[in-house]
Image (tube, rainbow, N blue to C red):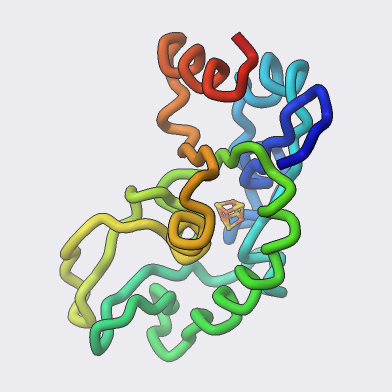
Length: 168
Ligand code: SF4
């Protein structure tokens, strides 16, 4: 656990305004970039560009195949980027070990925390699960405080998050 006076919080880079999404856009989050940035050290991370996927890139979705969850192209199911994404998860371990908390982008097949549609091979939505990076973090770092930005939309939730980090 780091010992700096400001907590160190990993944040999905698109929430910090970095144009790394599949469509070349970002999803800047006003509260994270405003109040939270004053009180914590924010560390951007993007599992998909970290794994070497380009911007822009064809979108992927999670599909259950033979009992495993794969990240495959929405338009081209033959485009399977699962192994690249899982390899980056392992490379991210030193960074993860340095964090006090993590804020992830909801619904992303990499970053979503229990909010990501999981499809059958035929295209039917079957469940909501965590993205490949978020699921890895939940398994490997169970003590780390991890939330989606969608959990920080009201004052009560934001205050609770700050309290967990000793900021209130
Ligand atoms: S992988 Fe995560 S950080 Fe990167 S663009 Fe998608 S949601 Fe944002």
